[in-house]
Length: 371
Image 1 (cartoon, one colour):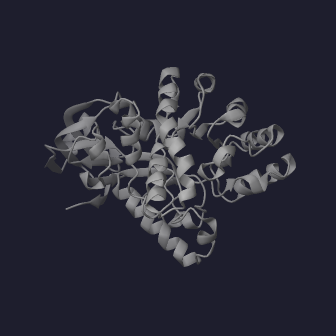
Image 2: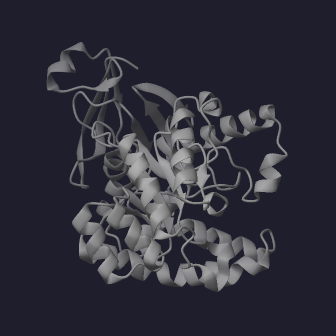
């Protein structure tokens, strides 16, 4: 859409507050007052709430299942189909940019449609804990494969049980990953529930800590001091717990998922008190999760994050983590990624219901509309 103006809407500002105003879309960017004369279409947006496009900085767009064996049985055509479906659902939820946390390769990224996608290609995990030399080579391989980020699984997750804080890599291995990534100008995202691996990752320069379920006050202060983001991914654990209880995921996952659900609100509050930067990540990896991305913001609000701060974590916060200060904001000259809600997105029940997203624009082009 070029030369269009949406008038009388509630518009999210850079400070996280909504004000009645207008938004101009012109040549793929947001326009300013000087562009008003060129507007050829005007729309009354009374009753709509407008936000920048949301940024999900932890998703698995190529996944339909957590079980790697299931994913490995898929043909290339089936993988491409899954990416198209998951990308479409994600976009319809109001997410216009993603950072994929593993699984989305450069060829598959051609299937994401209008989404912006930053790739990590594959994660580095326990099978790569074969010494610093091996890991230096693996980081180079990922860079050659098109990775813009290096994803490291530094502790266990819900499947690790009581061993969740045991480091996956020794200190020299974790340092080798970060040093090699820095030489290649690639930021590092680190899956860490807590423990010594989380501290080491921050000391070695991780750009973001994923999950941080059991992060301590000292680690929060360190994260704030070094400027690292925390991406809590609260919602995924509530969803896993519900599915384990229902029998759609193994019941053995329930104890660790319950531990995360109980601990995460405290972790988020610790981050807030220490001034740690937050960004929205869903860890969506099932076909039933893609398209419900903004449930993460609802969980953040319910954990104690003020609604305005949660919306900023999902927009400008994620954009800044990705090094894209031109995204996640509505301001003249910025790419016109815009989401239109028919209800107040500061309310958790609105964020949980994708039907409240009535239109999504990317670069000024309408890519999703409910009518």
